[in-house]
Amino acid sequence: MARWNGRCLVGVVAALLGGCVVQSFHPFYTEESKVDAPGGIIGQWKPVRLGDTDEEKTKTANVKPWVFSKDDLQTYDKKNVASTVETQFFKLDGVLYCDFTARGSPEQFEANIYWTVNIVPVHTLCKVELEGDRLTLKPVSYSWMKNAAEEKKLSLPYVAGEDLMLFTATPEQWEAFLKEHGKDPEVFPEEDDFVFTRVK
Image (cartoon, rainbow, N blue to C red; front, side, top):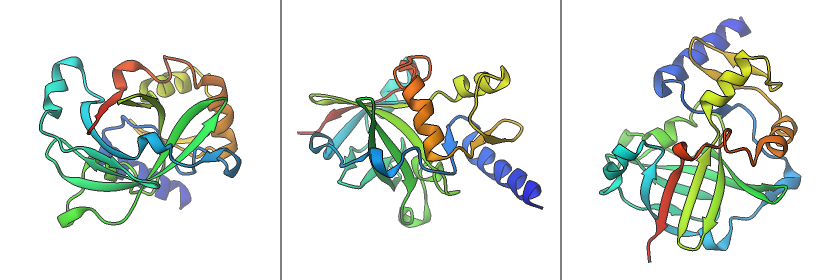
């Protein structure tokens, strides 16, 4: 029965996401690695690129600024549908990360993709790079994780569907993985970056 439920869950999430986001049933962090939101990140950030190819960058021109507070992030998709995700920052070996989960209900009974990727409920992850008025959120590469799993080079446990992986790794296992791969540009590739500039 548990196996059937797992397959059904994989199918539901796959329909929502198209199998392109690394998701975990458990947090990516332990209590020991948690840190407060950096003061410099709190405020409004205008999207420059939302994980798109270069040709699609212009689609962010009319997207409303995303807003970081101490413990959540107000997101907007390209249709300016708003949803809030809860944030938890943490640090490993000097690298700053943010764990995201769904929070509350979407506005007007609609939800944007940044809310729905967390609603199962699951956790998603980005490496955080803050340089002056430029903020970059770097997701884990789903294709890298999938290839590593297929080549038997990935020790993290997961539930697999036809075109989706849902990770069941513990926070301790995730932290070990991030300590090993957190600075690997293939695991956090530039082409998947979410890039923002500060709204002054």
